[in-house]
Image (tube, rainbow, N blue to C red; front, side):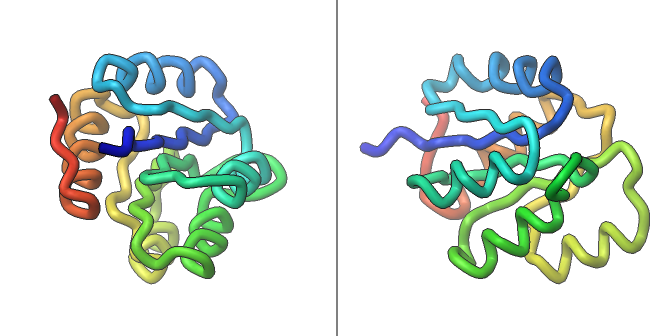
Length: 128
């Protein structure tokens, strides 16, 4: 069975590490990116099964990352997160078919459950 690859993208490196550490116990292959530009490089370089991406980042925003994803993979689940979630971001996320949109500060249990559900819904993966 393929080990799911999770890409976590946020310019807050401490948050990236915290999220990555929370998912390592599930045996996932964890990749991180410090901005949207790095995220697009990771997505283009190989198989990513789920993307967690912050909206507000330097250079390339999370919504721009999602636009790029949708041009190349219509089924890849993307979880968008934002500390400044508003109706416009929510609307655009829906248009881009975000799997979920989560408000920061995040509850790691909510994020964990959302990731596990996304991997299950799209790939039939079950946390073991």
